[in-house]
Amino acid sequence: MKWDDIQEMPCSVARALSIVGDRWTLLILRDCFMGTKRFDKFQKQIGLSRHRLTDRLNKLVDYEILRKAPYQEKPVRHEYRLTRKGVELYPVLMTLAKWGDNWMAGEDGPPIEYFHTTCGHKTSVELCCSECGEEINPKEMIPKMGPGLRALSEKARPK
Image (cartoon, rainbow, N blue to C red; front, top):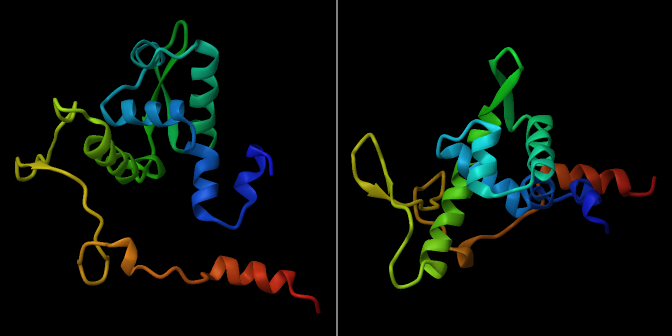
């Protein structure tokens, strides 16, 4: 299977990766959550070529993760803002950051700490069951076929 075909797989992880599954896109999203909005600032912070940055930003706009908003008329310049769909990627980045802090930070510790503005405390992301509130343990999870895979299975069944 080619990388371009991964979005056709009946798998939510594969489909999500088809959009956000490269390092540059994740770094762009990281910077968006830290307040970066303008092309030149993305380029300076990430060190990405103009061509590659343009490609990644356009893809995020095409998939409605970011939206372009003009901030200057002559010449026309845009900034990039997270959409609701884009904001929903925040837990993904926070979970990835937590993993990086736990396994890659080194002896000096994490490069960034996160503080919850409502209570003022330093925090980290925790995955909890939406029903009982208990922390999720992969050994206690059972994946089952969902409606999308059932529908695909039924379509493939000979008549």
